[in-house]
Image 1: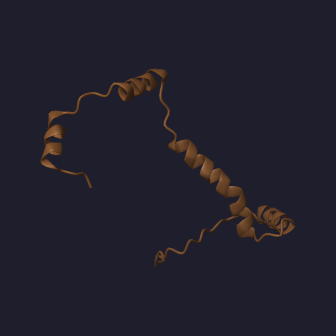
Image 2: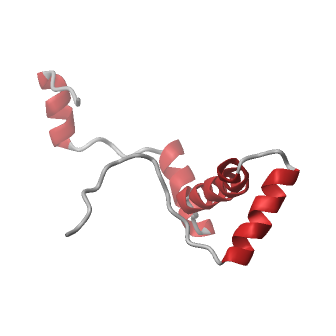
Image 3: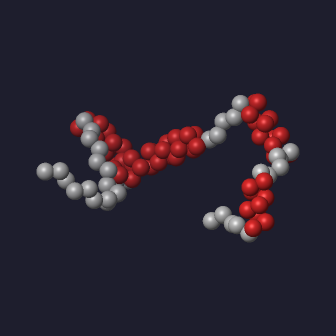
Length: 91
């Protein structure tokens, strides 16, 4: 019978006994519990991975295009002008 999923914030980690012993010893030397020791090491890496994935990279051509559009924006489409005059707002 499958277990019911309950959101607890708990993460299970399966380790070889020797790997767990190394982590536990290092945590003890730092006067941290195992969870704090692992989180202290993993969180900066996780944040760096997310930051890298969220970066927008443009080619030189695309960068120049964006700059040109910022300096010389196109005229708004007629539908947008009509909507603006009619008082429509975006929510």
